[in-house]
Length: 371
Image 1: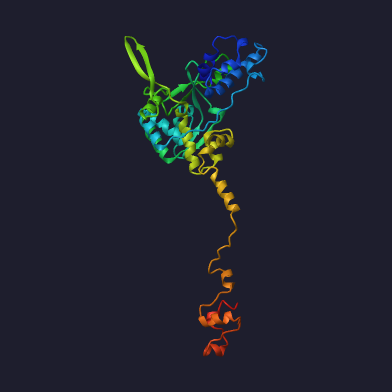
Image 2: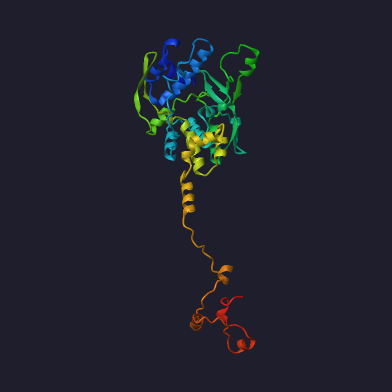
């Protein structure tokens, strides 16, 4: 949230006094894709200014002159297996497991970066999502509960467990960071709440520190998903360092791995309720709203069912050896008996010899005259 305010709201408002803010004029200067985000944050900021009596009214709430931007319909994007493998290959070896965590568990970026070795129950096949790694506006890292302040458990695929064992063997680490807030505590309560915790982070830098994922865009470029849009120049003493600058679209950032996890689960027929629990969504409706288009045959099953309902009824096929088939009249194959049937004779046709003496019917009429 803080990054969005600094990147979108503050450059737009600048040093304009609160009372001079013209919401309609401001929104006319932004792209349609970001108007909804700016509207939400700016409206919240101005509402706080009204509560603090710095403004008489919220200019974003003027009913006649200002209307909120219509929400744009967004569909989650998933990567193919080939794209995932290409991006993973473009990362340093110690960071490749981050892709595995996103694809195999559907973790958010902060949850993957905050995952600890003790959160992986490799024997039971379960991962405990207990924290996330965050940064404040000054770039200081700290731990906090996952989004929605909800911990959860996610099934651990056996192949991912094997990759985890290999990764932990090659890249062990330990890291201590503050909890909830990196600011120094000012009260006894804050001191207890912000007490630093030490965990064995799964993903770290080569120095064993927490990571700040700077390699992602280079991996996207190596996979052919993005191209350089400029160059960054950094002066390091007497040396000048140059690096390409990329403008990666938001849908190709780390979160796309979480979308891909959801798409694989739904295509396999997993239930929305289970998937919602594993993703940490507040309700299954949130999951359905995000990922309904990933469900195979969405819209086609109901169409096929209704088409079958409206189809003209047909006579049921009766198995040849069923009771109904046995009771149904059948025309014998004997030509002489066929003639008797055509003449309307329904009498008994007796055999000759011993059969006639016993008064038994002819075998060819069994099942025809009724029993």
